[in-house]
Length: 61
Image (cartoon, rainbow, N blue to C red; front, top):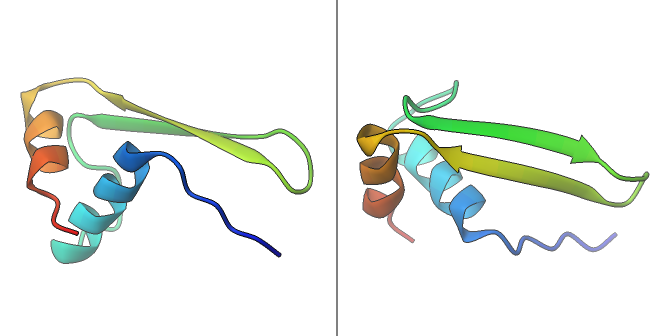
């Protein structure tokens, strides 16, 4: 099974959460996952305030 990730916001959010041992959502970031079919899902990441913006910018690859 192929696993493609094309959304940099999702990747950076996940990196920030991992680096900071955060299990839940980051303040200022909302996400929503939609399952299109058994092989395709879409995740939307919404930055809602400056704290969320700073978290995304600080995430290191």
